[in-house]
Image 1 (tube, rainbow, N blue to C red):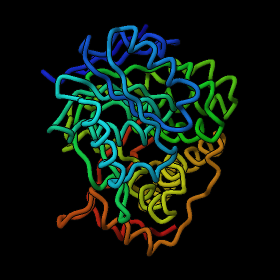
Image 2: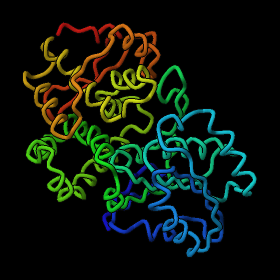
Image 3: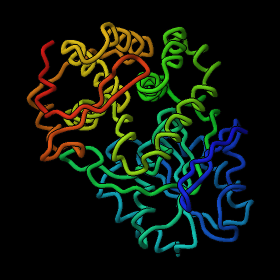
Image 4: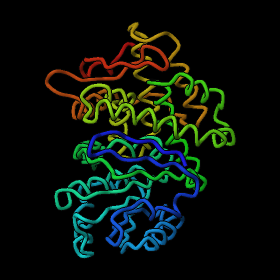
Length: 350
């Protein structure tokens, strides 16, 4: 087992990475003898719910599970009242735990439910998608979408632990692997040129990707852990994790949340880098390399959209305010910085 510690004082927690960990989650969920309210979705439940629940019950916890429809539309404010009611019916208290078993949608939604139910209960992240394992399960950002945009209602609520089982990736359809690769590529772009070069070398070969996947997960999680320790509430360094996300979130919103997050981020990374290159803010050739590695991993869309619609959506983004808009640019592959501008930056000069 590989273990990383997120050092946040009294909110510190461990991230554990081990194949087969789904069958041992009960060992790490406290309190013993308490209750666990497990939230999952219709894609994950047939594969892993029984195993996780069995482990929790073997550890002496009373378990209630709820299976939600898979997909981004579940991450809605309107889903929450049902979850609160089921938790109350189960008798869940502040001494018990919410357990999220699934991808980013379930982790974000369940985490926000945990942050707001009885003013906050502990929760455990068991991410089963590549995107959730390398990114969204770590760092305490939880929330739901509104019709006006993605993640507009949320909180910072750190998990009590994160349990990552790379074996769960074996049941993911290829589209979900591609979705997660959008975030993996992002980490190479902003912080780790060697990771980016590894991905270029793999060149979309799934067998080679899975040969390296444990180390890739560890590298991405370790980058995020270090960033979160420096800047838990996203006032500085943590903003770098939003590379490609401002444009990407706009695309997701314009698609009615039908576009996957990874595909949208991939388009956002390439698009904004083409703009920054044209302005001399980024080393030449970075956008072409980003586009190449994204398309190698089946993130095939080239960046194009109704730019007026994108700009209108960007103006509702959390990172936009009276003082302007913070966007993340690359100095070069492996080194990113925050640039203060306005939404009109996305019109560019391509």
